[in-house]
Image 1 (cartoon, rainbow, N blue to C red):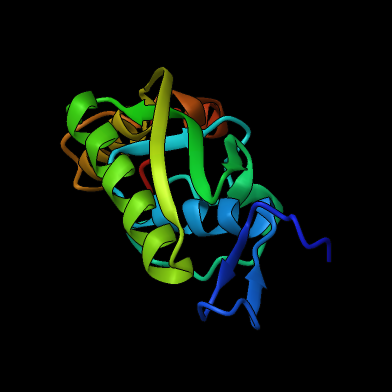
Image 2 (cartoon, helix red, strand yellow):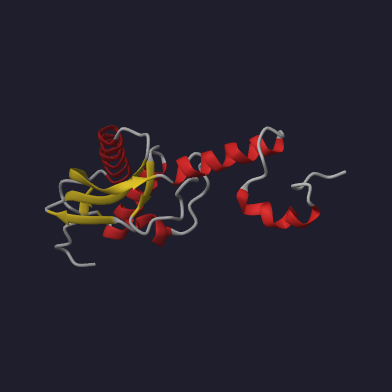
Length: 167
């Protein structure tokens, strides 16, 4: 590794030991921090964890977790840029503040490096959760007999003339 790598950390004053962090490692640490924050629908092209963060499922695909995250290191200072979509119903400033604090804390704790800034770019709002919850509620109402069968399955029972009711 080159001696002038800007991502090195010296363990002693004499400079006898150094640890080098590739930007991809820092992006992975930032991506893992995103999985711990509620209100994020996705990063740009970052769908491997969308909707599954609450279950804290293990991260298997590192390429997906780092999409939408750009890391730059200059003079041992880390600069992170994250592009996200926010779930509808969450306060955007609070989600962004949580992202900034989470990424900064994770990188500084795990690497000892200093994070100079975390820029969050919000590209839109996601209504997927709202739509999914409405569909689930409609289906539950159907199962309880409080509503007619959902339109998507009307064709399957149209021929029996009973609207899907069994004898």
